[in-house]
Image 1 (cartoon, rainbow, N blue to C red):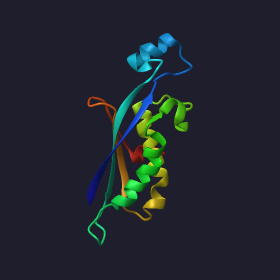
Image 2: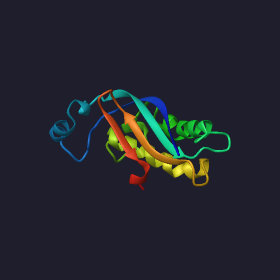
Image 3: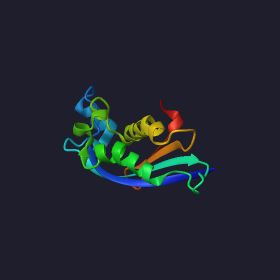
Image 4: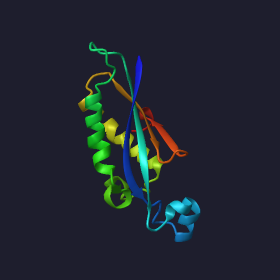
Length: 143
């Protein structure tokens, strides 16, 4: 069994702000990330999948994976304001944890159409918003 991890990058901005909280509560909870003008990150997303080798010696069809990630992750999020331009965050604070979960949901939802059959399996999503802040979620941990 092999694990393949493929790395992708996109840039996006956001403001961490919960509308049901006061300005003071938001600042206390999110600190400088609650800046009213937002801020941006150059996100690095790693998509990991597992599977046995196919007859061609591959665990994952990279072209198919790249197309899936381009459609479900890069197109909707790259160079976007996540608060204003990403429907997934219309009612949810776009923390990197929530972003990782949303990316995993999107890929997991479309995975069977791109990779029919038992293999490969989406294993996890890892997203780095900075060199120090890295978040990871396993695909089997979400619906």
